[in-house]
Length: 222
Image (cartoon, rainbow, N blue to C red; front, side, top):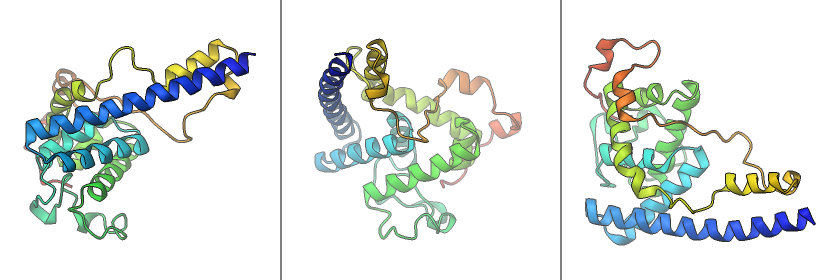
């Protein structure tokens, strides 16, 4: 009986989560259209790409949106120093191996996928230290602090209502029903990363970084 109840709870939860995901999509795309003047269809494409990459690489959607807003202001054809291209200002020369199958970095989905993969790699190299990962991505700790501050702007845009369910909540419910073995488990290797509040980021440097480094201006994009 407990297994049957767990399956029912999971089924209902998945329906509610799908509805919440659709609301996330609407909120993000509407915000991009209103705030940055992104065409509706393009805003929906960016929203889909951000949420897909966030789920794939265990990165907060607000973090990816913050980086894009700083790097390109959601201009897909943006160009920067060293050939930095697209929404997340990816530098082809620095990531040839990763980009060998990417034909067009100005295409939003391809660019967000590439930029997220690069950031995820930096996160792994930094042992999950977001400040160090962002420093590698943008060139300075000042860049990391700027991104952390911008995350606060996007957090309400992607935040779900308090009553919206999550996969973790569904798993907890199954634990309570003594049927954890029948519940879906997180994908192997998935990691969650903490995005520090801007005040905390501004008040402390990551290990191994000097105060002088924290004061430097942001270097060219990755």
